[in-house]
Amino acid sequence: MGTLTGKEQSAFKLLFDWNFSLGGRFRKFLATLLHGRQTMVSFSPALSLQEIMGDSHNHARSVRKVNRILRVHFRQKKASVLGPDLSHRRMLVNSLIHTPRIQKAIAAEAAAQEITLVEAEAKARKYANEIASDFSMPVIRFLDIILTWFWNKLYSGVKINHVEPLKALAQSHTIVYVPCHRSHIDYLLLSYVLYYEGLPPPHIAAGINLNMPLVGTILRKGGAFFMRRTFRGNPLYSMVFHEYMYTLTSKGFATEYFIEGGRSRTGRTLTPKTGMLSITVRSFLRDHRKPLAFVPVYIGYEKLLEMASYLGELRGEAKKSESPLDIVRTLAALRNEFGKAWITFGEPLDLGSFLNSQAPNWKDSSGANDKPAWLEKTTSNLGDTLAGRINAAAVINPVNLVAIALLSSPRHALGEEELIRQLDGYTRLLSMAPYSDRTAMTDLDARSMIHYVENLQLIQRKTDALGDIISMDEKTAIAMTYYRNNVLHIFAIPSLISCFFVNCASITRKRFCASVRFSTLTCRQNCSCNGRNTKRWPWCKHGWIVWLQKV
Image 1: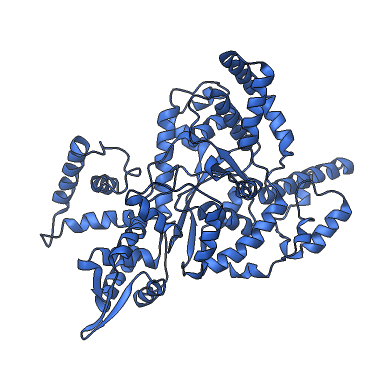
Image 2 (image 1 turned 45 degrees about the horizontal axis):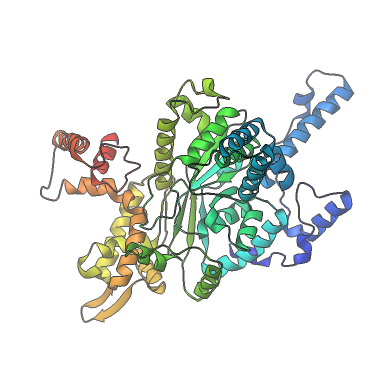
């Protein structure tokens, strides 16, 4: 990411940034002239003029046909980079308010609350303004300058994996990004990476608690739309939000939300919450002319910015409310080392194909006002599948591996040579039997990993007559459980297999499979997980057995 530090820093140039309402030819000329380094050149596959014209000898008709093909091609290409054209926010709110569904909800609100239609419509308009983003390309360019500086101060690099297939998918599908949620940095980092890779930044569902003075305005212009924690007891707000989400998905805007609901305080992928998934599915049922794909995203950190507050919450302290002063605290933390950030794009999930497998008659529900009977179960399975694909795209970084090794040792300490052997064993195992084809792993050798984590001040070195001892103190050990939990599921199956050989040197396949079946049956009868989908419960040891049986 360091190559971006040479970009233009002039605020004047932002006035002539590219957007869908750029203006006349002179303004476009100035934009091209001032933003030369921001120009994206894309070479598409060649078009055969002979194949387009065919046997036609009508010159005028052939010219119109070529013009039409090129016009559609360039419109789609532009939308895949900038996103679809978004009308002025005021016009968007007006169009939302006058849709038949919201007009019906306004009438119901007026009757229920015994107020006039004008007052009820004013409430709906207030909700729409509270929710809707105010996407601005000049602000995106401004954030690009600020975040480029920020990332280079905070991290020693941002590693991106499996982004190329996404660029082709974005030209044919509406994209919904569903990343894991580890930090407030997540949505800034993901939007920045997509912009850097020539993809449109998504519209991001953010909690209303982030709609703070100044910060909320910047986030809103950067693509954030705000939502309340619950819609219960407010059918008018619920309808406005549903209609807004339908507008985004039906027009082909990329969106992003966290299916875990909140940030994980333990490092594990949390049980998915299906509210936003249900809204997306219902929007797709109303208009499925353009295919929609979910893109799971794994975001991993070698050192987390909010770790101190997480540890406090795990000790029972109340969660602190977000404040603009958090920005000052973040800037104060820039003097520390935070290692690298990692982003891996998981295997996309085509919603149409998923619905075909879950509810073959789903198209019969298209345009229906009510929730179809199969919706709850299908969205639950959808959440489990996406959580599994997020886990499958996990990144194994040096901090994860050192944490696993030291936390498994007595007093959280090992001799350096013993730790090297342990880390070498982990890397060989993961290289020979990778968790999935989307999993990424550090390319450092064991000794380099130790020095790397040592530079992050997460471990200590003590010199002894028999050699150096690598250890961590009690406070750091608690924090390191977070980084261990990030990748614990990757070692689940190898750990289970190893358990069968603890007390015996060999075991027959028949006895091995019988033990697995017995354990699985016991799990389903007696375990607190009740035999639920194990992608949703990756840390349940009985769930590992179900995984192994599938393998």
